[in-house]
Length: 570
Image (cartoon, rainbow, N blue to C red; front, side, top):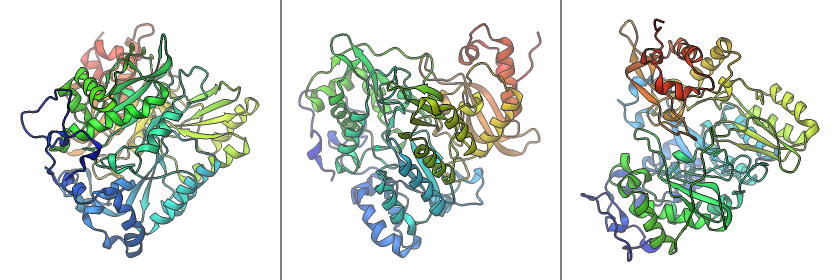
């Protein structure tokens, strides 16, 4: 039986919408598990698995691991078994999860907007080279993601991470996933409000807290006080977005119920003003509603966005105010959307006179050698450290004005660049079939080759075009909100053979005019034909656009033949 001490046993002041059938909502009395995931969490709080990893599994080896821990509770420690080699994309949906399991793990290290100083960067790099075969991808959730981790190495990895203030705790699982924070919090000249303190307070209250360790599913948080909305707030479960009240000054608007995957929905903007010191209270309230009223019957509907779709934002706000915060929120119009969200690439002056330098790897793929070298550069130049971004990039903070050019040059020597092409700057890719058990196609290497080819074909592109490459429908790389979104699937080639390919989404985006990409009926592209297809669409856009017309606006009006990459008679 779930512990009801931390949530209302019934709403005393607010009428709660009731679904036509039981959806496993705890606060409505449906506390018996309705699927195996809920049963597993009821059997044992997933946070307890840490001790078993430290004292049993790491000593006895992979074969000693309880399957319920291996494919369930390990996720709360940031661990997933990675995909075993030898299984092509056609096997992804045909085989059971345990058949795809390798004896190695993916491990996510959460940073939650933290500044990684030289010691932290070197620790991350050294762990990669010692335990992860030099893997260390930057994800679009401010994580470092390792592969090839052995269970025997986990205690030593945790000890080293904790020594520099980092953790893997609840980086996966039905829990508060890693928080997205602005990489320029506290330093940007045009920042509305520094949300660092609020993000740290949320983390202090909830990480490892059993009150929030059993949510219906994953729960994604974003917070930014920067006017460029640099944390993709539209597609998170809960987001706090910097705003200004005419009387109270800077604070945060609250956005709820965003998410992508197979049922994409943009967040609902509540149009409120929340002061910095009340942000953590609001977070707990939103997460509490999800915990108590979230749907637990079907995993496919166990996200906050489905509750918002059924309740509406007015009812959600009413429940939040009456049953969780016990006070009314202050009304305030939601902030204006920027033309595009900031990635902070390049060299920019901070409000203290120093500079921050945004640098891009290729589709987030770096390694331990690069992280170690970056840590050394940070110390050599006396910089404060680096933050990771929501776009698989990083920002180095606190470089002296006279050192910026030399620092940027030295970044080039370790495989990073503050002067990327559009294609390197604006292309993201998920993990893909190389390691992920859900993936159908290769993504990282395919996206890297696409970037290289597009740099050759369009070396002087004068506008931003984003490309997001995903290995399956789950949209970890935000397929639906890119100018060109590519969702991996098996397709038929011209000879009738089943090969790796992509469904294409065109004209999606966040910020001003946020929308999901346009899918063309029955249109698929083979992986082998991807370079030519993207080139044809970009060429058509460059030839057909009006003055100042952005790619997404062109897609909305373009002839469908152009979007399919077909020539059109003039």
